[in-house]
Length: 377
Image (cartoon, rainbow, N blue to C red):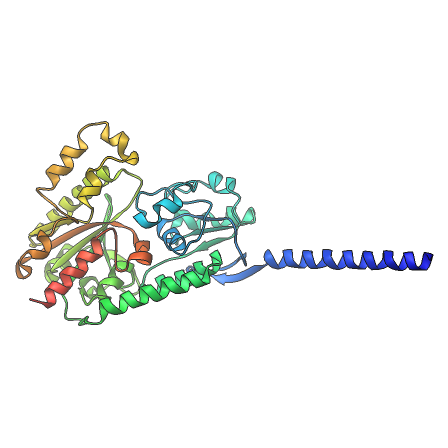
């Protein structure tokens, strides 16, 4: 009898040990790290199934959210497309793209932080590593980068099927948009990346330049002598005057300003670029602001502070006499043969994930329309 009881006891211990071992192995497998290479070429060890991801820039989060991914932290921005705003509205903010708050990031207990290859994100790698949190930097400079990001983020979110559906949808739209493209025969385009401090030309190594080339435009920046492998090169008045572009697109840094204030800021940049072009002997006939006038003039929670001044609506409506907005159709009805178009659009690369070929609100749509209009001249 004692032998029987001892045997049962041994079996129970063995079974308990087996289940504890199996449970431990399952936990280890769930928390196992995989080695990946990010856009900077760095080897990063990330969880096989990250559960608490913090994003430092908008376009990466846009792609992640567009396939149903759930983040625990997001950057401060007013640039998110409408179709993901509802799904991310309750996610805590961790600061603007150029000023991430490390203390806030760590308070969210992330197991992965995703940013982009900019100095203010790169400098977080060491402190995050010291805290045991991997930093994955993902850049989007081309259509292929968009597709790769969808695949990668699908794996991160455990939503590979949804990512495959999104990728197939974009590939289908892309094929339809580019089927009639006549490469090298489109209008000459100058894409300016602008800030209050400086202006640079976007080459085909940048997302905007890559998109313009795919749509059939001739990007004059690619003809400059000092291009090499640079995404952006200094803006030269002599070079612009020599090349005499048909379309000028001004890409501006999106921030956390209310949209009314942002439009006024964009207008000031447009005026500055117009002056520059005039000095180069180029007269702009149409100034286009790629914001929706309807959205701008409708009061919303994020513009209350600015609206209290009581001047924004009048200012924006006055600007309408000087600018064409995304709601206006006059731009596409104008005589294409006599146009010199300057388009201002906020800098939001990631919107292509859900709305190819957008490049900041309606910006790329109008760029596409102008290129197609050029073919029809």
